[in-house]
Length: 302
Ligand SMILES: [Zn+2]
Ligand SMILES: [Zn+2]
Image 1 (cartoon, rainbow, N blue to C red):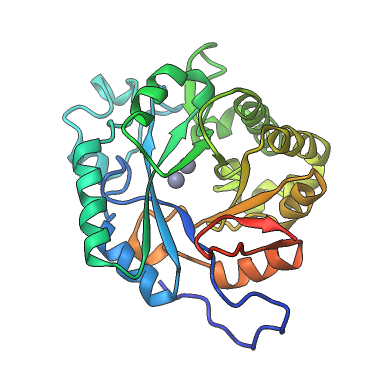
Image 2 (cartoon, protein in one colour; image 1 turned 180 degrees about the vertical axis):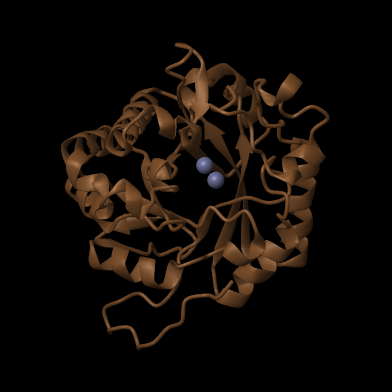
């Protein structure tokens, strides 16, 4: 994977240090078949990151099969005895995090890479639905806690759920984003135990040109409202660089009174760690957020 090149010197008032990557996955996430914690640390050092957080999936939501049945990749088929249920149309829930092995691997990497700040973490789905189970996991001790929505209601079966990607057939493209934001609002309005809102743009990961122009303008009012609820909760907005995040979100976050941003590549393979951080962090700096004194910390507002 080609990393972005730096084609011009940064202006004097632009931070030159990269932020921490506070959202990555290793082999301990159920969907990260090519994850490799050590290789991710090596990559982080090569590209000059001050810190990396391994925020592994913790999922308690059961997904229904999408219309047409599951089409999981071979990795899941190899990893689960019966991942998709009888006939390929069953329910699915990601495998639990093996906390002991994970924490041992974190310690091993801290020993191997003393020049890199290595944080433990979890990315928890639908925190507001599973608060007790999640508090149980968190009692084991993690440094970074990301809360994410990955799920929408299955309109074929009220009360049951689909992975957001699979709900695409049930909504118009803009309605899918609006439904997603409604779930995000419910989670951030809750007292669920998480500090960072992960990928507010998750429902756009599979947006194609056929779906039309970027839809944020059509849901601006709702998005600003959700960002206001997030700001009032004292939590942090993640600038996820997978797509990457539309920079209007950072501007609206600043205007909503948001006090800090995190950066997350959401890498599931080592080469994606810190992906697009150089140009995205420069753009975020221009919108009113800056590194803290501690270069591994969240960026605060200027
Ligand atoms: Zn996620
Ligand atoms: Zn993730």
